[in-house]
Length: 638
Image (cartoon, rainbow, N blue to C red; front, top):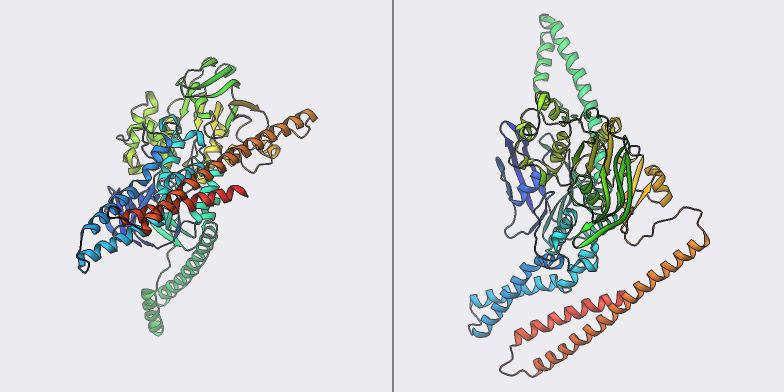
């Protein structure tokens, strides 16, 4: 389907991609893996035509439809969530208009045997097939199902997109791409802003997706569930494995072991041969044997060991100046925006030297409280105070909005550094794997992982005594995350971090604040103890909607009774919602069936004024609508 042929992408004398070739076939589910900055996002942009190679070319069929979700994107404003999502069907609306135009033309033409007439008929059939395939259910219904699958609630549909965070806007863009049903899906770290239920929904969707898929993700489980092929990008080259991620890891290790063993054996053989040649080169009695071995060495197909990229971060934060005993304190704090109060009556105290995590669902207020700490957002009520002599270093979740894309890696730090630290900028950048010509790269061409590393490097420019990090590991590979964790453990200042990553937080933080249902609750236990008490495997499970928070094992009878009452209330509310939906569907089905009978009567005895083609099209549309609503009605009876 798509053929990548001898592609090279160069920046000056540095080759990001060096003469790579591979093929994407129909129904391929490819996991594109490699370190941050290896060129994974660049490959996707090349396929989309958003970037041009230095040399080589990409071949694909005319009219192929590609859906691309980048790591970093601009979000549209001014529409509601549903209005923005429905723009995914603009191409289908264009087909509807073309269908109407062809029907009008066919009604007027009488040259039934001509080639032009047959071309119109063929195009009419193609469009009807496409519409029939896409309109298995009405667009509004498809949009609602997709948005609900990605974590939105019914009441969110009429909210403006600008009232949602960047992560939720990414979900809207993902919904639009999925609803377009492209031939090829290119998804660059789609799970970064998804909760666990949405990830599971997306896994199911992609497993059953009929087209081709190329996926970049640092989520091993997600890759294993969705992909059946792994393409590794390593030092400008690619290595193609026709297996899922876990099997690729095993096969790669096995291949490297075998390759190294074969290389070492060959080197021993070469060494012995060269030793024989050196010893007997000038002995007449051995001349034939010497010449034979010289020729054998010349013809030898020498084994080369694949290069590996062993470069790692070497992060060490500057010593933290002493601050007051209280780094941050919030009393009876209520915070939100004009459209929505996010949480109420919060009590938060962060003491000097503590390492604290903010955990909970997306949209519950973790980043919002970070903004309050940074002085970017004023509380609605209550008090929020920074402690004495506290100097905050802030790593925002949306580095792409903060970094100046026109600057280079080096100038990004050089423009804000002052004093003696300016003489150490190259060393600081080297710690974060920006070496040699990397420091002259424009921020605009950096991957999400590289931008995260650059944002982290900025925190080295001053001796902060409070680090506020909002999802610092979102775009980082596994090895980089571990090195950052060790550096933060060694940091002697105060740490506040927003993260869903259990492995990253476990052993790093000693206190957590859980954001849930408009409230903020303090937990003094470890991450693992917290998960054990909730019977959860990871922090993403906090994202499960409608899951009641577990109490401690010893619960009073009145508490249990209250929980049972609340559960019954919840069930009855859900039952009422389902009953209302069933009644709505029954009413809508009756209306559409009535219209279908009217159309059947007209088609049985048409008048000169009746447009048979238009009536037929409307009848088919009604039938699809009835089938979709009947299917939903039946599912609600279960």
